[in-house]
Amino acid sequence: MESFITPCGKFYNEDCISGAKKHIESNSVDLIVTDPPYGINGDKLHLHYNRNEDFVVEGYVEIPESECGEFSLKWIKEAERILKPGGSIYIVSGYTNLYHILHALRQTKLEEINHIIWKYNFGVYTSKKYVSSHYHILYYEKPGGNRTFNLESRFGVKEKAPNSGSLNYQDREDVWIINREYKPGRVKNKNELPVLLLVKMIQYSSDEGDLVCDMFLGGFSTAKVAIGLNRRAIGFEISPLMFSTKIEELRDLKPGYLLSALRIPEIEKKANQGKKWIDSDKKTLIRRFNQLISSGKTKKASIDILEKELGRGRWSIEKMLKKLGVQSNGKRGRPKKKK
Ligand SMILES: C[S@@+](CC[C@H](N)C(=O)[O-])C[C@H]1O[C@@H](n2cnc3c(N)ncnc32)[C@H](O)[C@@H]1O
Image 1: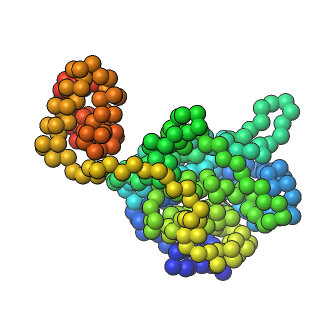
Image 2 (image 1 turned 90 degrees about the vertical axis):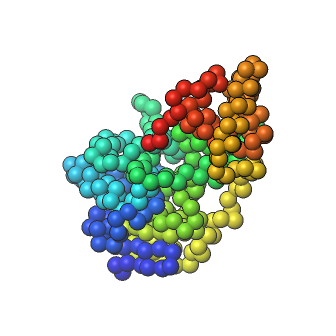
Image 3 (image 1 turned 30 degrees about the horizontal axis):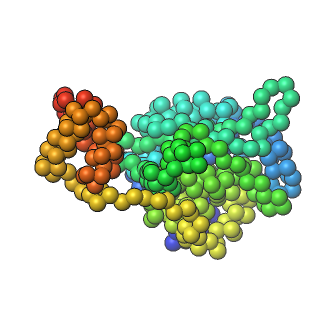
């Protein structure tokens, strides 16, 4: 089988570089989440991670270490082409070939947003050194558009953790502790990404109906989660065996099957949230902020009060004060120029 096309997905048993050129238009993809081959000659990944080799699908295609630099540049250039301006890309990478990926990214116009560390369980056991138990996730955007970042898609900004910290803040820290899934007795790819990790990236960085691409489908985990969250999926897998084995699992997937299991964030809707700031709103903001600061209140306490008075969110107030050139002491500097 060379391809598998459904209303919510298009999957090709092809090399992702030539395949993307053939099947994906420029500036058409909202989000790319991908996990390229590691370029580690003779790696033993399946031996320690999946424990029992009988359940590992044969046919994983590795890239020789010597070709890793050129290969990374070629596929990342294709990823840059197909992303919409404002589209995001997450690349999962081990340490060994991280420098090839970073070097390739620097030869594109893609811009770094975060360098995330994913800490996982089942690290390779060692006795004479520390146990390696993390991956890198490079989160970049294609400039020139409005990047989707769904701030409250998982936790409202006011939701408190048991330690009284902010759940939203904690979820957005750039070290993620997410366990790999141990699936005894089930057929899998050598390194399937956990559902929870994929859900997080896809929730923050795309909306329902968006197009999510994985250049290296492997076990099709990105595609399955994207469909489960009601996104459209597209991608490539070069191995015929991997493709034909895994495609079977996609046939019966119902779009949106993961939605009912998602946590519902508590979001406090402000009366004027999202409303355009007109001139009189801006004047009121400057006047009241000045009064509060002059009365001895801190910037934070003043904004707390203004949130209630103006019926707007903290970020919106802070952004407007900055735009109007209002400083922390209430005085006006030069207004911030539009970029
Ligand atoms: C690290 S795995 C992806 C794992 C996947 N994220 C998952 O959760 O199952 C990389 C995959 O890329 C495939 N691959 C290698 N070279 C490729 C290429 N040029 N085009 C498309 N797929 C390729 C490999 O066969 C392998 O299945």
